[in-house]
Amino acid sequence: MSLFATFEGWMQTVQVHVEDALDHFLPPALPESEQSQPLSRLHAAMRYTVLGGGKRVRPLLVFAAGMVTGAELSVLARAAAAAEMIHAYSLVHDDMPCMDDDALRRGKPTVHVAYDEATALLVGDALQTQAFQTLAGEDGVPPARLLAMLRVLAEASGAAGMCGGQAIDLASVGLPLTLQQLERMHQLKTGALLKASVMLGALAGRELTEAEAAALASYANAIGLAFQVVDDVLDATADSATLGKTAGKDAAANKPTYVSILGLDGSRELAQTLQGQAHAALAPFGEQGRRLRELADLIVQRKA
Ligand code: GRG
Image (cartoon, rainbow, N blue to C red; front, side):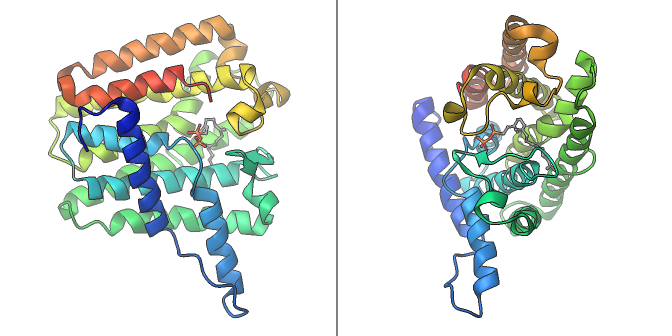
C-alpha cells in the first residue's frame, strides 16, 4: 500500500482490507437449520453490527500508525479488526435502553431494536472477546510485543479506559462539569480507544524509541479530544440523516458537552488548536507521519 497514493485512495484501500479482515475474523454466517438457530441468530447479529458501516476511524489510525514503524499489513489488519470490534461492541451497549437508549446507529436500527435486548447484550459480550481472540491469533510479531498489544487494547477498553469513561458519562447527566472534568471523561470514554489504535499500529512494526512513543501518545491525546469536540459540534449542528444516528441527543438529555461549555465558536477554535498540536507532535516522523497528519485533518474537518 503506497504512501504516495492520494489520501482518499489510501483510505479506500485500508477500508477494503479492514472489511475483508472483519468478515474473516467474525463468526461465520450459519444456515438457519433448526439445530443452529440460536447460534445463527447471534452470528448474524454480530455481522449486522460490524459489517458495512461506520467511518472505520480506529482501523485507519492503526494503519496510519503502522506506516510510521513499517508494520506488515496482515498484522495491521488483525489489530484494526480487533479495535473496530471493541468499538462496535461499545456502540451496541451504549445504544441499549439501560444506557443511552437509541434506535438509530450507522443509518440502521440499533441491535436491540433489530433483534432484541438479550441479543444486543450478547453481541457486545461476544464482540469484545472476539477482538482479543483475533489479536491473540497474530503470529507475525514477537510474543512479548503481542502481549504488549493485548495489554494496550485491554487497558483502553476496561475500567481504566472506555468503561470507566462511560461510567462517568452516565453519572454526569444534568451536572455542571468543568472543562477539565469533561476532558477527563472523554479521554477515557472515546480517547482511550483512539489512542490504543495509534499505539497498536505503531507496536505492530519496528521498536519505538521512548521519544517516538511519547510523540505518538501526544498526537493521540490531541486527536482523541478533537474527535469528541467535533462530535459535540456535529451533535448540535448536523441532522440525523447526515450523522446516521440521532442528532441533538446531548442537549435533549441535558448532558454537558464542549458546545454547552465553550459555545460553538469556542469549540471549533479548540478543535483547530488540537489539530495544530497533533501536527506538531508528528514532526519527528517526517513523511512517515503523513497519513496520521491527514487523519487529524479528517477528524477535525469531518461532517458526519
Ligand atoms: C458501553 C462500555 C460502553 C462504552 C460506550 C464509545 C462509547 C462508550 C459510547 C459511544 C457514545 C458516543 C456516541 C460517543 C461519541 C463519540 C463516539 C464514540 C462516536 C461514535 O464513534 P464514530 O463516530 O462511529 O467513530 P462510527 O459509527 O463511524 O464508527
